[in-house]
Each structure stands twice: as C-alpha cells, then as structure tokens.
Length: 240
Image (cartoon, rainbow, N blue to C red):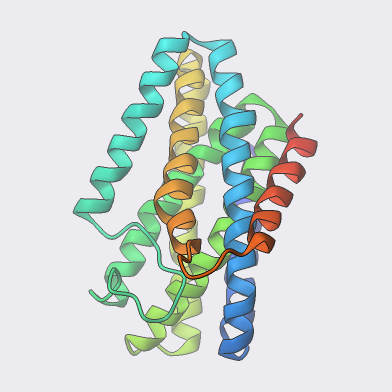
C-alpha cells in the first residue's frame, strides 16, 4: 500500500504543478504542446490496458467474465458521463464544463476516485504494472488539469484557490486507492475483475475523450501518431 499512497500523492501534486506551468505560458505554445501530451497519454493508457491489465486479468480469472467486466465498465462510464460531469476538456472554452467551477471539481473528484481504483488494482498485481498505470494516468491528468484550471479561473476562482481545489480533488484518487486496496486484500478473487474494470476506464477515456479531441479532418498530423506510438513503446518497455 505504501507504493500506492506515494504514487497517488506524487501524481496529484505533479499534475497540478505541471498543469499550472502549462496554463500560464502563452496560448500559442499551449496549442503546440497539448496535442503532444494528449497523443502520448492515449498511447500510454491504451498500452497499459491492452498489454498490461487485460492479459493479467485473463490469466487470473475466467476470460468471459473478464470481457463482460470490461463491457460493463464501459457502459458504466458512459452512464456516468451522461448523468454527471466527469469527462474533462483540454481547452479554455468548453461547453461540457459550462455548469461552473464547483461542479467541475465534483466531476474531477469522481474521475480521480476511479483513477485510484485503477492504480490499486494495478499495484495489487505488481509494482511495475502499478508504476505503468500511474504514468498513464499522470499523462492523462496533466492536460485534464490544464482544462480544469482554465474553467475554475474563468468561473471566478483566483489562481491560488484553483490550485487548492485541484489538489483537494486529487485526494479522491488516494481515497479510491486505499478503499480498493483494502477490498482487494480481503477479497482476492475479485482482482482479475478489478483489473478488467480498471482497463475499461483507460480504454473508455482514450476512445471517447482523448482520440476525438485529437482528430482534425482538415489535416493529417503524423507527428501526433508518433507521440502516441512513443507512449505505447515506453509502456511496453516498462510493463513487459
């Protein structure tokens, strides 16, 4: 559990600090940096799910049950997305987050809680898979936090208050991780399905949020695919 606690705390602080740095550089540089971050995050999350979590889940549990868990997780995240704001924008002007700063913080906390579950499931299997999952989540959280910062500031929050609220919402990952770790320790038979559920969260966010935000029908940008591929290769080296 020590590794899990350190990973959630460090990831939370670093994502907020990194987002703050990116947010306060000029917008042109933001526009250049964000697609690279999103592409890299997509690669790390997909590789962690398909090359790390799902093979481990299938090896420890019944394949049909694991796949049904993945499908059920995707359906659950779709329901959450439709019933509350848990999906994140990566830009300042965002219709999804037009409801206001505090609602964004609630949605972010739910999302972070799910991240904590994913990290607990990964660390319960192995340290390397836990580290890989943490990197994948951090790579996604960084551009997310940029969007959250922008929305909070546009909602009237001061920079200091926006930082504090983002850090506080990040502690939901620690809560989700600790509760999940305790549950997995007590009921070890659910570990394969916890891994499958965690994989479904990474897959859903990648396919419904990150990839659509990178698609530009007006031009083909091979460099972003290269960043995605870099994320895949780094994860393969880490978790293999």
